[in-house]
Length: 200
Image 1 (tube, rainbow, N blue to C red):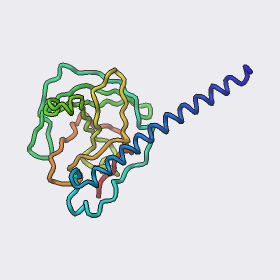
Image 2: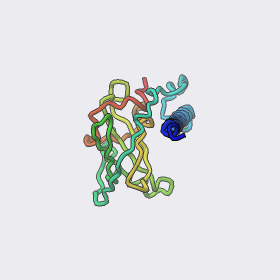
Image 3: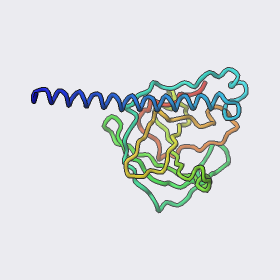
Image 4: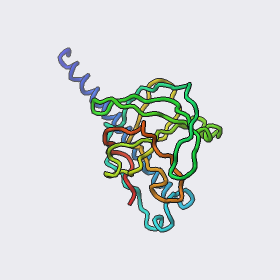
């Protein structure tokens, strides 16, 4: 019986990992389905009328749960509000809310997390945070101007960054939008080959 115990523990561990992985994949698929539904809805879609007529679904990179990453969250409470540049003359006010420290393939990276000062006064978005970033996949499968990840105010110093949920700014679909430009400090010197691809 004792000789079987290590094997049973290994099997339990494998099944647990597989179950967790399946849950992550399903969450990503649900995100993709929701995004496709929004884009297909004329009331919500950022697509031009011409593109909407032929729209079927967005193109995504292959799901890879290696890019569902546990990160350390560090709050930055003393930051001053600043005007974030956009693709137009609009300059919305943001504040750096915190930082995320994490590793990809053994190398360390950091992303700043921002809070919109306008949205923070809206009860619906009180806990809304925003991660605009660029990476080495931009222009090579993903939108050249970078992508975004939506985020909620953490309740601990450990957070999950799911790059499979990285999406394009609306400017990738139509010139009628004004979109925040990812700050240079949020440039990742690594390709992130997951999430939404460039819309063509």
